Amino acid sequence: MGFLYRHRDVSYTRIRDLLELTDGNLASHAENLEDAGYIETRRAWTQSGFETRYRITQSGVSSFQTYLQELRRFLDEVEPE
Image 1: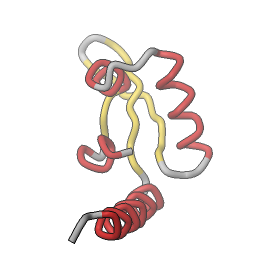
Image 2: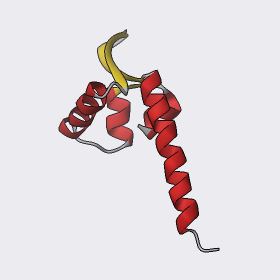
Image 3: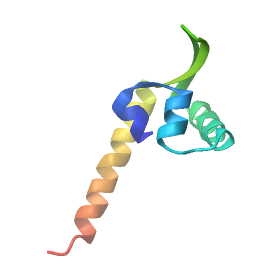
């Protein structure tokens, strides 16, 4: 989600390769995120043929921002003073 939050629309192979995921692992996570409404999967035409792309939805952006706020709040609480 962090990668999609930053880049918004990314190819399957770029995510897989940069995050060093297996095809099955990425597909499983993407399916769960799509079921939750956080990402959309689409097929796009490129010079080398079709590629699968993932795009973060507005719901995904909002949920990830909430997650970041909660994580920052938690980290502030555990930081030594």
